Image (cartoon, rainbow, N blue to C red; front, side, top):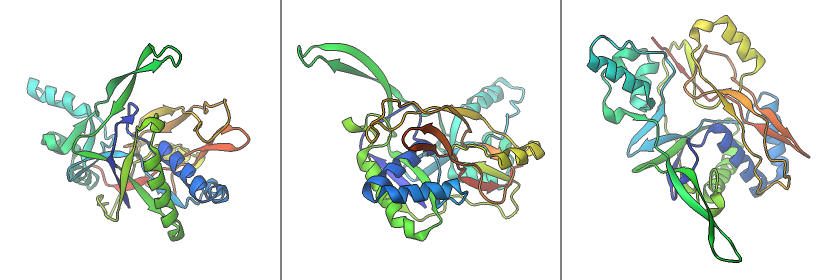
Amino acid sequence: MIVKLKPLSLFKGSTLPRSDTIFGGICWGIAILYSENLLVELLQSFRDGKPPFLISSAFPWKRDTYFLPKPLTGSIDPGNSQEEIKKAKALKKIQYISSGLFNRLINGEPYEQIYLTIREEDYLKKLKFEDIPHNTINRLSDNSEHIFYSQEGFIHDGGIYFFIKIFEESLERKLTGAINWLCERGIGGDSSIGKGHFTAEFIDKEIIKEPENPDRAINLSLLYLNKEDKTLMKSEKEKCSYEPVKRKGRVESAYSPSTDIWKKTVLMLKEGSLLPVKEGFYGENVIVKDLNYKVWQYGYGYMVKGALS
């Protein structure tokens, strides 16, 4: 299922919301709308290696085109001419490619052939986030005392979306309710002053066409590797192409009384990483804070299969 989000405001941050952020928001929605007991049950299912649902990170859409992270397939031969070298350098900056190009790539079409004939409407370079000025007001004097900047973004003629795969049909209504609550409450920072608000549309549509004989798994979420994953990757190194990323966040202060807000830093794999095909699930959730309750970081992989040349 695709969760298509139409923005009602700017969203705060230097990147689009990622799987761990979205998961945390959904968890709060479940606890507030339904019960903490239900949330505890769901988290236990993840801990037992039986996730009731999986989610991806958020990606952009513009008009009728859905974009996906460019798979980390390696470097492109730049050729010899200045024009070819210039184009190869420009292609390295591509962050997202259209679902059409993504499908061609995961179904075995040579990536050099695709990228060297790519059209401008088929990709997005790094999304632009603007530095927006803010100020603080002295409540006694009404004077502006401090100007600061935060990075905020907005996608013109589009918005963002993510995938959700629900394994327990009875949860679908509750999950859609939690996502709608999250969109009204706001995703990311400064939600209390109107940032990160969306309307959600739930679309039962398949935009990824997996090949019949895949040899790779492409990750569409942040992935925290478990021991089994690492063993498999060591045995099939030639099929791995990935980029690590550090994640460190804060406990949601609106619903937690603790002043000790910083979570433990964890190392994860970036969206678009390529790994060997695996039976079962990649990744696991990891404890990043132990207060009077345990704070879990979402680390399951949302994997699609491909046959990359």
